[in-house]
Image (cartoon, rainbow over all chains, first blue to last red; front, side, top):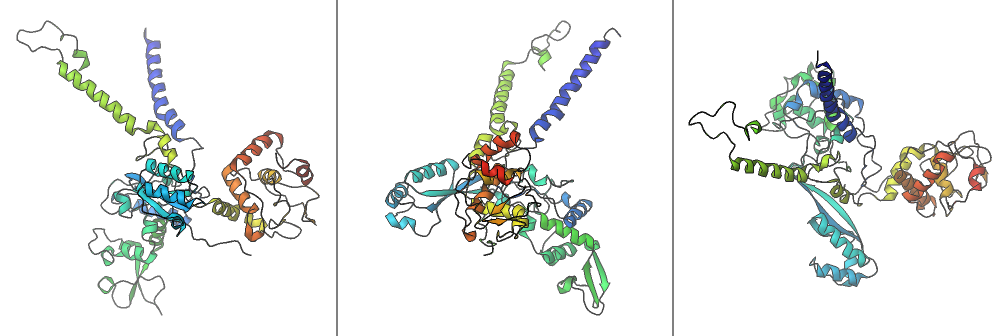
Length: 289
Length: 206
């Protein structure tokens, strides 16, 4: 073993380099406890743990291979900006002049202040929006910038913004999926919130979506004889999918858990890494007098 | 490929064998590819910033997209109030006589300078002799320190309480910078909760 020390050093060096590359570097990059947090809605806790039933549903989702045909990854092509005037200030003549100079419609002094908040510029780039904002700021007006993510997935209503790693941070098993035989489910909780629709779709997909290629998950349901009166849980199926007279279809706990999981899937929370402007919150819940 | 670049193949070249050197155009193509790869990396890597996803290209660009326009500071403060403060101080901030002091119309809340209120929310509050609007309060129920909240969140909730017109509070807003300054000042100096006497001794503008 004349070369023993060299062999040892070479092996040590190779392992050390790969440890730096595969363990330490990702830990430094992604494992930091403190990242920049979202600045649009700071008070939102996100992601939150899924409720218990939804967590069981994740296991059902996994066991039945839903992820083979459904992804949970919304893609985004870009982010456009709307400039919204919230306060015209006192020098409305100056504001009107800026808007007329920028060819954003013809305004006459006090008319600018009517119907606030109003959108002045739509679907602009960030640079254009910031330029207009600073012009208006010099004229004494206040503006908000509203961020609008765009992309084909977002146009389909599959999500409000792109999916990022943080969306999966509360799940022990992540189900991002890789194939889209069916639609993306990242935002299905907001898109299809109706529990009965989801249950009927699981039992007989073609009872609600005519040409659906999805297999029936009837084994998550129980076919039982109607007792003294039908159960409240029983599915209200159309005639061609309904069971024989005197029988009813009742979801097992597995089906309910799966639907609870689907309802917990949402991708509409603004994040630092995926900013968007949420629709204005309803002004309710005011402190009691 | 590279091993064959400059050296002839082992042994003497056979008669009629092709020139073993790599043609110059291949090297040019290789370097062009490397250059294109560098440009592509520059545009699409995000420089391995963990929070940069496409369509954003860099941390600086992502930062420019962090604009206000969502709920305002009072909304944010209300959410935090309803998550943390409401349990003791109540939905109308009326408190509980003798146990939990009211925030609505309280002389502690409505001080012009927020120094005392920031301190007591950050570090907690207990000890004898607390009087709010002249009413004595039982100090066995101490206020929990809320230093786990961020500067932004604390500023929002304090602003919400101080400026809540429904509660007849009219004190000016608090900025995250003010909270940050006081947090830095008391972090080392004052680990335990404040007593009323201590707070009354300090200058609320600092």
